[in-house]
Amino acid sequence: MPGPEDLDVTAARLFAGLLRRAHLSRPSDLTGVVIEEARDCLGAEDVVVSLVNHEFTALVPVPSRLSPPRPPQPVDGSMAGRAFATTSTVDADAETETGAGAGPRGARRRVWVPLLDSTDRIGVLEMTLPAPGGQVGEDLLAVCERYAHLVAQTIVTKGLYGDVFERVQRTRPMTVGSELMRAMLPPLLYATDGLVVAGMLEPAYDNGGDAFDYAVNEDRVHLAVFDGVGHGLSASTVTAVALAAYRRARIEGAPLVEARAVIHEAVLSQFGGDRHVTAVLAELDLPTGRLSWVSAGHPPPLLLRGARVVKTLEAVPFFPLGWDFGGEPTVAHEQLEAGDAVLLYTDGLIEARGTDRALLGVEGLSGFLEQEAAAGQAAPETLRRMRRAVLQHQDGVLQDDATALLVEWRRGREHRLVPRTVLPG
Image (cartoon, rainbow, N blue to C red; front, side):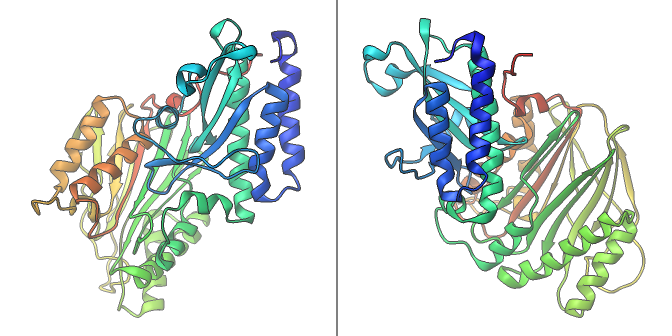
């Protein structure tokens, strides 16, 4: 293990080695490169790279020629899952964790580090490190955390060129409609100072026409949730057209009413009035917290303030996209307070039914949000738990797609989405 005096040199070797070797590597070779660099530069042993499955229930090891096959670890109830859920490094005595004696190598500790692509959590990097005196130094942990950050970004980049990582994350085949929707989605999490945006799309493998989108441009956040009529590929197709039209209008700087018109015309011209999409299109001014939105036949967002859902954000009702009845929607406005959170969602969330056939409803959804806010959960963990709760309420099988976009403004949670230590200097 490197001493404090040469830790900076070790970190430079570690990062440069990964970048140099990953440059021309195949996606399937990357895990081996990650393991070898951690072993050679940090003295790490038993290194495992795990990715979260699409259900967000398990962390699945990525196969490597340098490590034996391993079973997935549950997100709930495992050390790896704790690191993933809290987005913070977790460590334990290696002998306690594995049941092996320290032997001639001396004290060791098992470390689990979240894999964060920017702030989007994709999995966990696990390794055993030498621990003189029974502890891994904070500076070394900081190097491991930044290494995991680089590994995550490299996985996401390399994943564009092969299927190895996507195969790991799937537990069953995905429908064509789901393939179409997932290919168009932005990352499930974005965070910066004063802002967190987290998304959820369920079911993972059989989504029909639900989608969400967001973009952060200068001091403005653009948000959208869509729900295409029907199920399966036909619903996904009409939603894909709406989403593409929305992005075109947004990139060109169209205001909300004009953007709605662009989407409406695209859906109408393509499907001739036979198909439609409900939607909420919103904009948040970051410096002031002023939220503006238009609704096209969609459930109103919920406003969470001080661990309470204080209101639904109603707008003057207007027709779904693709229904040609003329007129123009009204833009609604709400002034957010520091710490507020807004949930945009599709009706599949509130229409989930339990074994008693009772609807979850807005009241049940609000109660869940209040419970998680009171517990101090950050936005991505709130949605992961929401996914689990909705499926449990639905007896494991959704009757409709359930999609959500949770936006936190100046809530002070964004610090929870990054590792707890930083590199010295």
